[in-house]
Image (tube, rainbow, N blue to C red; front, top):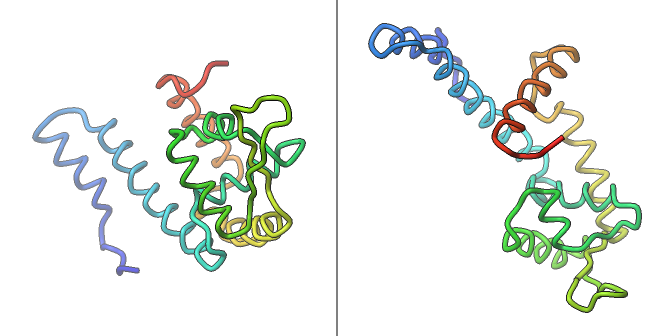
Length: 166
């Protein structure tokens, strides 16, 4: 990790933006979100790496764990993970290669392939979950109440962008 700067570069950029361009509130907020995303991504990647997982593969294992039958159609996985079908195929290919999931034919729809988590997949998901929970998913410095507020604010942005309907 780099040594911390003696000043907040985003606050400095916001001040200069304000002086030279105009209101800086949105710029500072977006720049902060982007930087925090980098911090969180790095922390989560480092926690998952010893388990041979990326965040996308970890999310897929968690999603399958949440499914009542421990299996889901690939199309549904893509919808829930908000990923393009090609990305889901790549994730499932890698998980299957590692023995963490298996593909099964759908019992009533020949066009549909189910993905089911294996016992090894469950064990890997459990160990990986401990690793990311131990580091609070990389989101440090907030109280539980602040974390809930952040989630609510980001949910508003996602809803406004059309991420989901309620």
